[in-house]
Length: 190
Image (spheres, rainbow, N blue to C red):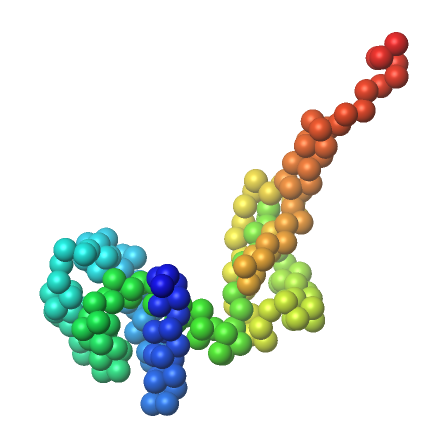
């Protein structure tokens, strides 16, 4: 079975358990904190992925770092994963948990790349269009990024989709069209 599939099943179980206990948001915060720690501390990330280090040693490190800060449910879940030798799945499980959590809460992340900062009215209009088209969930977390290489226009990224309305893309299409142009002028042919 693939790592993604296993992580998805564990994430679904954790979500159901956390919802039953009314701790869904708290467990999410714990997993986000754990993911941030993995990203910030390279040695912790390597430790969690290491097949050489035994699970009980990994769990001892996790307890040392996070016990008292994380909800007991989160720590118990980490222990279950360790007992089943699945602690290396924690990074993938954290990502999958976040994906499923966002779906349950109706949250979509939209990233807008533009050549210059966009006015607030343009951003609001984009949000309305996306919601009206049914392309995203009801709640949108919109992130804007300025990329001068786009020259103009914008690029939208949402729900594994990319909508590229940038000048850079249009210029690239024109360049390819001119390169692939098989038309030979009759004037040159004579």
